Image 1: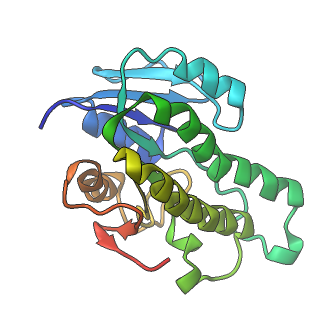
Image 2 (image 1 turned 90 degrees about the vertical axis):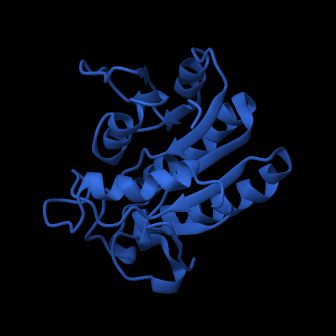
Length: 217
């Protein structure tokens, strides 16, 4: 496998951090963090970037010196796990959308012009955004991930002429700061099911995956 240049948002902790550590031994990984971190893994580069601000994204991506092969939109928040729709604060919903849905769009707008032909975009979504299995509570998170899924389909349809594929995936319920200690899956197990979507040439675009299997929207 030839070395790829991979751009990962939210790479300072959780799944993003695990992806950086897993991939930087064989590839050049560029990851983003909202604040400075000291322990940058060898083989990776950290850029300070806030996905909710266009100026921050512009400044970070201005520092890129090589084309990007793979974009992983991983940065996200879950601020409202117990909040019902009628109790939700609208500003909180708007902030969640700005991070979880518009953040990936902002980053794609900046990165796609710098992508190689045959590039891939992976949007980290959630089963909580599935319309086919929609529950209650966490209204901001659910709506933002459902919208991210829709964005995935739109971007794939618009970019396939440039041979750039776009998919979203559910990493499962993972033991991170967001997922909590009772989650069923370790970061390492989750990552092993993400990596094939980055490199396997048989993976089709414009779809929603969990554990390398296509799932319903």
